Amino acid sequence: MANEEAIKKEISQRFGMAEESIRVARERRVFCEVGYDAFRGFLEHVCKKMGFAILCTITGQDEGETLSFMYHTARSDGTMLNIKTSVLKSDPRIKTVTDLYPVAISYERELVDLLGAAVEGLPPGKRYPLPDGWPEGQYPLRKDWKPDQLGDMAFPIKGA
Image 1 (cartoon, rainbow, N blue to C red):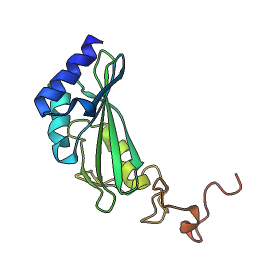
Image 2 (cartoon, helix red, strand yellow):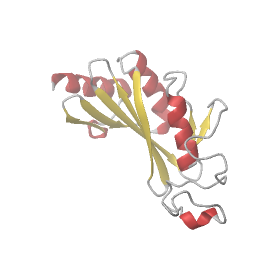
Image 3 (cartoon, rainbow, N blue to C red):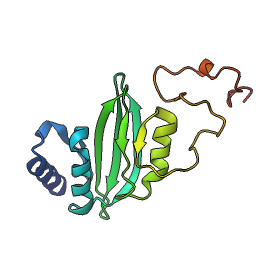
Image 4 (cartoon, rainbow, N blue to C red):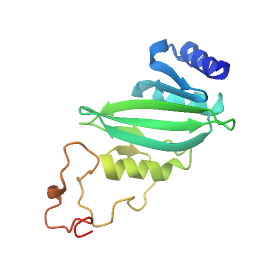
């Protein structure tokens, strides 16, 4: 696990991160948490300087007062760096990362549709994955959302 420890050391030294905020889960799997104010610079560095040029997916989660986003990045050797950042749920603004990872467009649309993230700089396009008729302001992956908030709209799962 020397490779993972070298990644941990570079991140810790370059960004002054506490060792506790970087965790080697197992061989080729590193997790870290970065404040959103430092997130963009951090992501650029790991993408361009450390070889984590593949974005596998972005996972979003409602954590109560905050929304967290986990960017699952990888290198060509199969090592994954999973980077978590969080923003206030009351003002869930994040900037697009499509300039670094063009594939992020679909993942960011999911964050908009399912969690209500405001992704600044996201190119205009169709909704994804919710249908066009889905009511605005209804985010089904938020903890406080209930299916009955859809009103008269036929819930897609009914009768299934």
